[in-house]
Length: 258
Image (cartoon, rainbow, N blue to C red):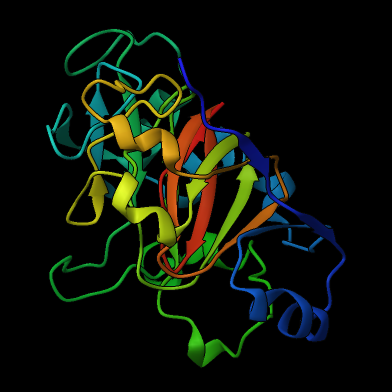
């Protein structure tokens, strides 16, 4: 079977604001940024700390019995949990308390107080955690649209999608493999709105999606402390990751937690 060549994203360490704006941003290509001071979140954000800091604030989470979540077919359900209970369940492989099955997986994408009107803002939804993380100062604060807090179970993969703003995906804990496709290859991605019908990019059904193999594939493996810059309309796919916590500015594509 014909396979897509895998192109690794460039990595850059210790970038100053001036170098990022001069050498990286104008290229409009995704890049992995390393060696950035992200603050005390790197050591403080353990399961116990997160549970205590955010307490029993109720959050709406995705619950799935499969690793590959599909937004188009909705192979998951929404449930509400106290944040501390959610964090502990997301860190488990097997659960003694659960909604569907003992090995179900969880995914939180933080929302505004009124999801229809309010943007996700870490300082408003999780104020005790906001001071722990230092957002890379590559842009003026007024240029930031939102800060999206995400936590997921290990092994979970999100659907393939694209966003319409520049993004910084900050990987605080765990690991994440991210697969991206250029907007120029949109005709090969079988898009339905902002989502792709191709869920398993590693083993795509080429009888159903024969043009998909023509799309150029970019990939990276994020480790704790890495920041992925994704220009607007890049098409990312979150791949399998371990139980992880990350913050996106303003919003990020698909990721898989290892």
